[in-house]
Length: 86
Image (cartoon, rainbow, N blue to C red; front, side):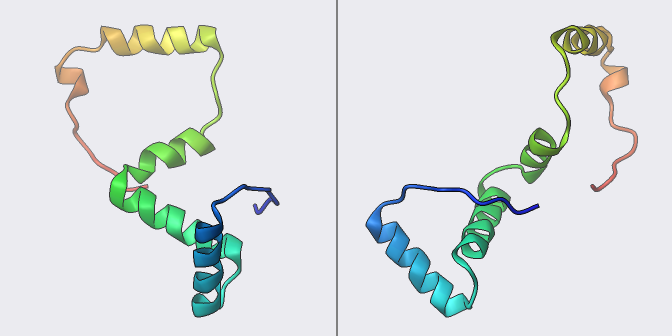
């Protein structure tokens, strides 16, 4: 879902975005999205950000229950047996 935002940027950065917009024949928003996605892919774990944004927040009490369950797991239970790509 796209949503309109207002941002304050250095004039040099804004000029660079304008040039990228012209070169790529894309909107400024599309250029920013592309740059942020590439930055996250190269500098961070994209799964962290995907989950942080997409997964609904849990209540404090539910979080405590989850922490208690995770804290009780043994080393064997933490062993990865299957892997799935999201």
